[in-house]
Amino acid sequence: MSSCVEVSLLSLSAADEPLRQHGRLHTDDVSVAQDVVAEVFEPHTLEPLAAKRLDARLNAVQIGEVTLGYLTYGTETRISLPPSGQWYHVNVTLAGSSRIARTDGERGETEGMRGAAVLLPHRTQTIEWAHDAAQFGIKIPRTALETHLSDLTRTQVTGPVDFGLIIDLTSRAGRGLLRCLDFVRREWDEDGVLAQHGGTRRHVEAMIMTNLLMAASGPHQNLLRQEHTTSRPAALKRALDYIHEHAHELPTLTDLTAAAGVSARTLQLQFLRNLGCTPLQYLRDVRLRAARAELLHPRSADVTVTDVATSWGFYNLGRFSSLYRSVYGETPSETLRRAKGG
Image (cartoon, rainbow, N blue to C red; front, side):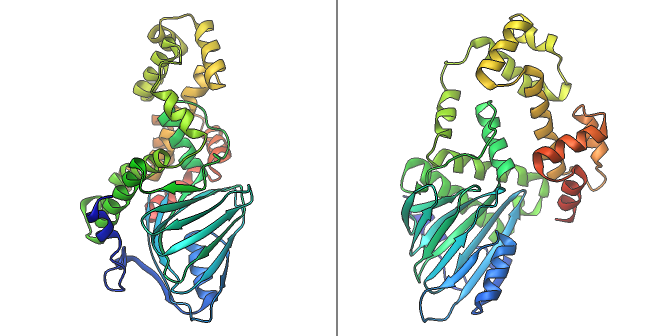
């Protein structure tokens, strides 16, 4: 592991701790700590395990849909996190240690700069922090991470991913995740260009999610490996490439069959067998994800939902809003309003 990463991420004094300009909490009150951390991350139960008073500190920033926060409690604590159905969390241990248990039977431990824990949206998790534990917490909406995995692998991800509990931060991919987080931390600590310009944050968000998917173990690794093999039919790959390169042009099924070099029936069958959907359903999903990305990161203050929807071929705004809400749990106008407010 690079010593410069270790030194920069482990500057943990109150004056030099990560994201220090973005402080959200410094308290010895358990109920206050629980409430504020729940507001930034997710509702949970916080229970001190030692006589030593709490010394909770939380610094946090919002990067698109991803929340990144530095958190320490200053004493031994237990956190019980019920399933929400909405969020993946990753606790990257910077110092000290933690023990984690999930209701799927997984148990594990993390040590500073050596391990991170992945908390799932559909499981109950219990985390015990050592008195000297300090962590980066990453919160990512289910829809965002599963959509990103779909985009990386060009397949349909339809349910929560059962990531392995512990990420080995000493592995090649684990070190990549640490470098990514250190880069992001530096940008926000030093008020860098990426921190100043909202339009660039979608790239930072994507970088965090890509590094996380590469570093975490689990069944999704089969999808990532498959994307780099030749196991899929060549015609299907040509069609997928065409969709991702020309989605904004709203290609027709005729366009896709011409790009793939096969009949419409053959292409339909290849999509159904390999991806579980038709070519036009896949194209619609790609356009919907692109529309969400624009709503989350509007080009200007004047952008409207109608502008975004029609630019991606959704001309029936009522149907677009209904589809969008069924996938993302909020209306397009709510997404855009939140993005402009941020």
